[in-house]
Length: 302
Image 1 (cartoon, rainbow, N blue to C red):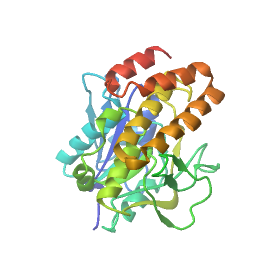
Image 2 (image 1 turned 90 degrees about the vertical axis):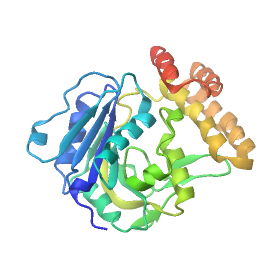
Image 3 (image 1 turned 135 degrees about the vertical axis):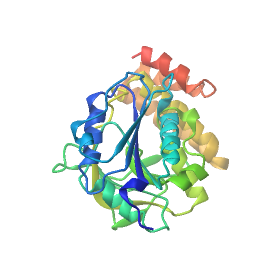
Image 4 (image 1 turned 180 degrees about the vertical axis):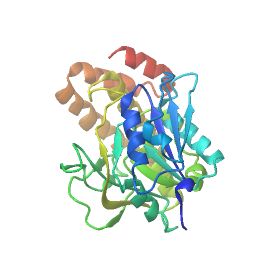
C-alpha cells in the first residue's frame, strides 16, 4: 500500500494547551511527509487561532471542531477521527498537543504501515530535545496477570518490536481498523484510554502493533493536567485502572485488585502523600460517574 500525504490526517485534542498546539502543528508541517489534513478538537471551546504562517505555505487543510463541552481525550480522539474519516483518509496520526514531531517522524511511521501486516505503529519518544536522552526509549509491556503497564528504558532489542500497546502521545493507526474496534472507549475520558484501545486492537488483530527503533518525537508531558500529583491525574489513573480491570483482567481480576491496593495505593501514599492516596481510593468508587462530571470536580480541587 502506497500512502500519500493526502491519505493521512493528524488528530490533536486540545484543552488549554495554548501555544503548544501551534508548535505541534508546525512540527507536522516541516516534516518529510506533511499530512493532508490536521484536525484539532478544541475541548476548551477557547476559539484559539490554530493557523500558523507555515500552514499558509502548505496545501494542508486545517479543521477545527469546538464541542459544546469538554469531551475528554478519548471522545475527542473519536470526534477528530470521524471528521478525518469523512475526508477519506487511510491513516490517522494521533498527536498530543505537547509533542514536537521529528522531521522524519511522521514519514517513518507512515512508511512502516505501508506493509499491510501492521495496524498501528509508534517510535521512540525523546525528552529534552533531539540531542538529549530518550524520555521513553523502550518497548511497551503489559501483564495480563496483574494489569501492570510499563515501558522499558533500555533501547529496543530490534529495529521492529511487536508490542501489546503504544504510548498515546504520538502514533499512527489504520483508519479502517480504528473504527472496526469502535475507536477509543469514551468512558475513560482521560488516561489509560490508549491502553484499552490497543488491547482491543491486539485482540482483534493479533501481533499487528509495533514500535520501531527510531526517534519520532519529543514529548514534554503534563501540559493540560499539571503535576503527577494533581487530583485530576491521580483520580482518573485510579478510576481507569479499574475500568481496565473490568474489561481485560478476566479470572486474573483478584490479582489486579491486589496490585492496585499494594502497589498503586501504597505507592501514591509514599510518593505523593496521604491526601493523594485518599483521593486515589475514593476515585475507585467513581466508575459509574461520567468523565465530564469528574473532570469538573477534580479540576476544581487542583
